Length: 126
Image (cartoon, rainbow, N blue to C red; front, side):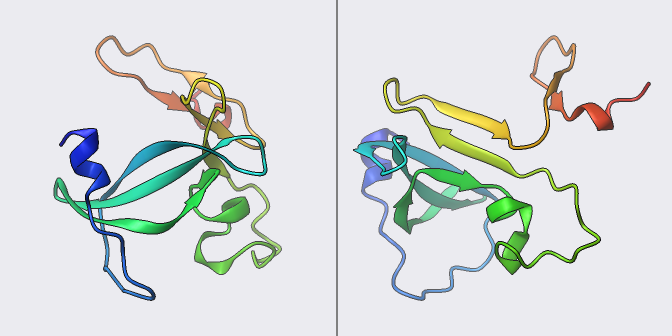
């Protein structure tokens, strides 16, 4: 799909349950969020077919929820779960490029020739 076609995907209705989907398309916008990063819009996709634009813009996409807490919400993680990945994607203000980072971890790059593989250092074998 072209960018123009993606922008025409209908927005999800209020409280509409769209069920599970297998991927997201991230559309950076030119709007700046209060955080100083660009806002992004998200399109839910299932089996290669765009379902809808998810309502609202955000300056960050928190993978596994805010602070890695999944659907529980921030501050509601059981105390025994201390080391969450907290993967986040944001959109750089000047360039509009996406940045993937992990709040409390560093990344290690694999040596793959035809694809890119990144992992957290504690998951790399010794």
